[in-house]
Length: 80
Image (cartoon, rainbow, N blue to C red; front, side, top):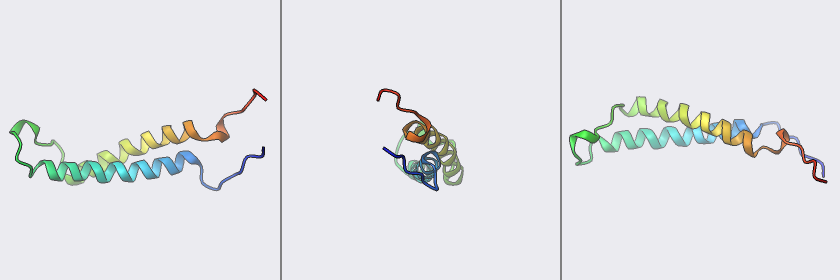
């Protein structure tokens, strides 16, 4: 079977998707936790903007790794 070549690599797509999702989820959780009626010990260290960048960086690194692992272009099939 011929492998299709894409213009965009799977690691880049994974990095973008998980980076955006991570940024939105972490910034939203930092914004919500500061107003949620919980004990003082669970107040987030970061605010909404710092949480956004923290989620973006961690999500992008995770997406890059997962995208590389699921991309078939990097692995050869030698069983057949």
